Length: 275
Ligand SMILES: [Zn+2]
Image (cartoon, rainbow, N blue to C red; front, side):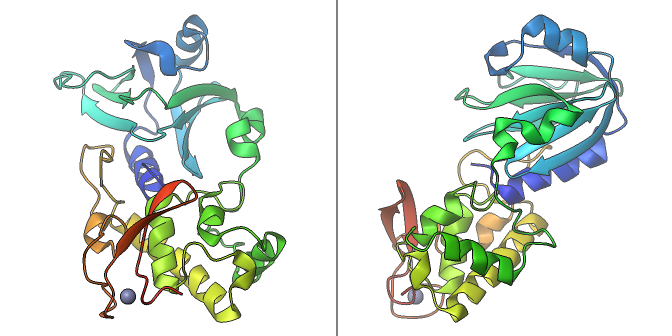
């Protein structure tokens, strides 16, 4: 599933490709992903210019010259592709934005969990998807002190469940939660209140380092994630424990990476060096 690094990659690619372009038409072969009436959607979107692209948690926002914005969530398996109009439609997109440079933005989610909303600029932060989010882990004001204080408010929660909780911290999903906990050498089931200062510091460092490196490598492709140009992310080559069950621990200890379930999600860790 696209997490922070994958969504950030798509956002940056959108900034470099579609900002400044006019939407000349929309096709909606499967409009069920639209959370706005079809007629209203077409009427309000066609003819506008894309003026900016942003990301918040795992959401992508395209700002329009009309003073409204499109909010996209890719959920588990959604993709966004930027292709020339005449590129073969190999897979059925649900919504296609035709652009005035001869290209299209094709939004597709085979499982139909993703969605597109249209919001007034002033209402973006009030949208239910965005109003209850925790801080962005790579933002300047997310400091070690702040992280400590946040953990202090949820001492009984399991640390992996907290990392996955978007209202606690935004953008981290199952892949990077496993990688961050391995980096910090912390068991996913530990109550957050049991973490030592040293462990909290390693968690914080792991979060910043791993997410930044994963953005640099354009994300992780395990199942279906591809970027705006249909390319897979390179961070798959850097995964230490996630989806690595049965492999020797990359720390060089005597352990083997195992898979279990924590917070309802398949969880990978090394039972030897994560305590
Ligand atoms: Zn180990």
